[in-house]
Amino acid sequence: MHDVVRDVAISIKSKDKDALLGQDGVDAWPEKDDYTCCKVISLWASCNVRGLPNRLECPELRTLVLGSSDASRLELPNSFFEGTKKLEVLVLNKMKLTPSSLSHLVGLRMLYLSGCELVNLSFIKELKNLKILVIGYIYEFKEMILEIGKLTSLRFLDLRKFNDDIGFLSGFLSCLSDLEELYISREYNRWEVEGNASIVEINSLTCLTALDIYIPTHVFLRLPKNLPSFQLLTKYKIWIGCGPYSVLGQHKETKVLGLGGIPLMDRLDVLIANAEVLFLFYLEGLKKVLHDRDGEWFLDLKVLAVELCQDMEHLLGKPKWSSKTHGPSPLGSFGKLRVLKVYFCTSMKYLFSASSARCLPKLHKLDVEGCSALEEIIRGDEEVTDKIIFHQLKELKLVSLPNLRSIYANTKKTSTTEYSMPSTVTQPLFNEKVMFPVLEELYIYGLYSIKAIWDKQLLPVLKVGDSFQHLQRLVAFNCKEMKEILAFEVGQGEAAAEANNEISVFPHLKTIQLWFLSNLKSSEEETKKSRLQALVNHKVRFSSLKNLEIYECYRARECRSEISVAVSKCVQ
Image (cartoon, rainbow, N blue to C red; front, side, top):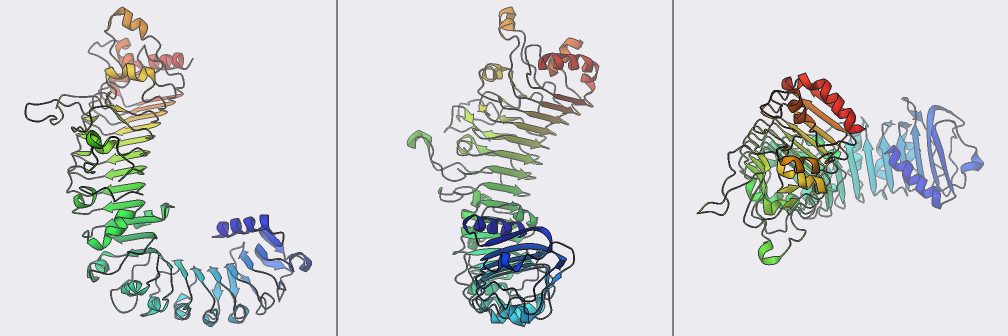
């Protein structure tokens, strides 16, 4: 809040000459002539600041920001605010106050108190015009809560940083009938259905449009079916049930939702459908949420994290839009999705169909971990026969996926179906069916079914720059069946070898890290030359490579010196 208020004050000063801004640790109060006519003052002073006036004479002052830059609190005189009758915005950090010092501020519209020592809190009820109240780190909050309930004109209440041992008294929230924004500490877990700290009271706040709250599982399950109502919310950070609710604070988006270990009830539909960030943790029945929707859900979703959800074979359903009958797909459900994380969903066989993959034009990061049954990321369907292109994907992380065969496995047509299950024949991780034109970072850990990263048929594609041209970092770790990294087919005749000589297929690749790849090799020939080709093919030049790490790759250890020579030649 310190930085936020300071930024606001700086912006005011740029437009208003009647402003005084001090640096951190001011040890001498400014001269009276420097501030008497100011409309904005922002000072962060030491607790022993010299010249602190008993009465601040600023008849035109509208905004005052005072903070102590020391660990100790700065004590303000009882009559300090008597000369600031027009004050509307007051921000105090680590101050020691008495009720008489604030009782004169009847025109105050915003009050922010953090880390303050308040001798008596009766003054709060006198601030009848107060619209915005932010309370942080005040241990007298139990007494203050009684007074806050009398501020019937309050529109904005932020209690995210208060002592979480304090319980709300019955009727406290329902008294604040004009409240539009309510922010409660996510550490607060003493909600009840009835009595003190009753979460049902939130439903009486008919003007509420913004809510930040954590609702425990046992409370949510006991609530009436129609409570609480979330229909009017335009901003929210809500976690309901179990799970890592602290992650909500990591996102700046205005609609953030986390659900963990609870039944998916209809009352949650409006929150799920409109979320910008969505965490789904240990849920059943998720298929009805992510599949078979009419295209009106998830229009603004930017981040989706799914963890420990076990009743789905695939993540995203097939889109309703058909490219065969309607042309290119519009930007609909998941069209704004930038980050997708899928962790420990052990029944999932693939993430999405090819037609669903084409509906992810904004995907920037894909992180998949611990999905033990996963066979491929994309599964083919009759809607898509051409290449899939992830135009904005920059980071791809695949971790502990022992049955993953390919990103988009090659399939075979049968007499009964146009597309069959992927062939069990070993396939490379990447082939020509999926393009990654801007991918920068590739991490693959624990892919036990993968023997090669790139298909030899990708060489022409890589040469013309359609894919992997921006790759900067390659990390392969504990892929025990992997035999090839960057080796392409060489037995194409002398003309082909000459034509392919000194091809720079990864012009921006700076780092290659290969750890615990026990079977890494190039061919059945046990020559140093062939082993070297498994790592740095003689036809492939890395113009930007700066770091090559090889650790516990037993079959590659013998060619370590040759690899170093090859890398130095590539860099030259």
